[in-house]
Length: 290
Image (cartoon, rainbow, N blue to C red; front, side):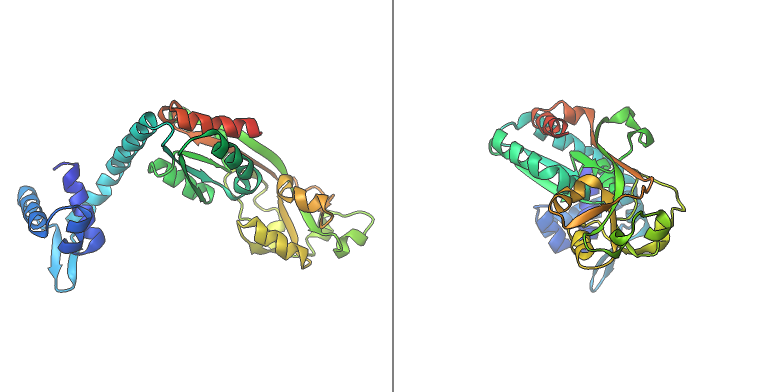
């Protein structure tokens, strides 16, 4: 069995059809049928049940696909690294960012990247910390920048560079009833409902923090959270940099009561990727932005 056999099993499983799988594998259906028969004979077992509506993987085929998943990720990582090594002015970088990085850092980074590179494609996805790490481990992303605590990661196999760190603040619309008080204590804050992203890996806070009990709306989309906060009595929480524009415009006001919650972020990249020109250039843009 070799990597081509693994791709054959995966293609048939994903499509449920020899005809559709043959298209994905760029071979004729009779050729694919012969290859499948040869593989089943070699393994001494049936890999797919044949039903009128299509082919369904047996337990053996599912076992093979599960065990092959790390191998497929390694092959993908090798292919991406070779691509990054050989393509300079016409390369491609797959970047993953967290929601806060997307809003605070990414616009400036993109402007500089476009101005300083040739015909280079930058593919960007925005996800939570767990999804970013999963895609990074599967070699689907070359660089990830998001809510990661470096001291909580196994950094033996990667380069980890600190990015933004900030205290979490609470904000409310400028006309919120809270601001009629001479001083604002945490007890007053928890009388209102809150809006915030779900806590992620880099958020340092007490597990039984009282604002957890007052969480009305959770979303990683800060544009939505800010719009809701501007039109309601909800209190919104997040890094101060996220609200800088609205605070400067007088639309939102920072609530002085301390939350004792902090947030930090980091850029993660594998050492072999870091040595490639395009990746190193993008990393340097992130470093200079902070």
